[in-house]
Image (cartoon, rainbow, N blue to C red):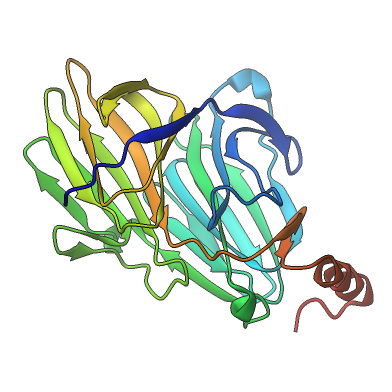
Length: 280
């Protein structure tokens, strides 16, 4: 590892309203410019204020052409979809759903014992050759996600590899790295990331020094190219999601819950939805 990735951009998440009135912090949204390829969207959702009243969620809605990744830290989410899957994902669980040619699903959050719901949703693009593939759903329980711990460092490895430890989510087109990283005060960590891959860090607790630059929560860090990142802490700990993946390098047309390659494909998705042929 000889080429350190520097910070190319620090993004302040913006509040957005989605679903049936869910307030989110959004760092990335789907755009035709596709500057975070292969990543399309990153949302940080939290329901921590009792004044918000009853929990709203995401009633049954369609997706085509993407993968959605939901990671729960506190609380839980009831899920059901048109494949016949249903269940509850709770603290530490991950739901990795490949929508492929079309899926309908519902996500209804529930507060945990502390009254809090807290987690993230990531959208990952699919290459054109897989956009109309068979939908696939994987529920990854917290118990199956390995934890790497060493000298003040704790990493939950959802996808990718850390020092020989590989996460349970595999066979994803973007070859992603998806890590929940905690670093105690006065520590340093280096992680290799394949050159040419998009690399992001979502800092959501504490503060850390990334490539020599201090970043406080809550921020999204975008890294320039290179073959590794370094993170160190001073007086405070830091916790962040580290995300990387191989760019697909294809044009995209995002439209609500659909991300396809052409306008005609978006129009076809709307026709299929109207005609009742969206899900097969």
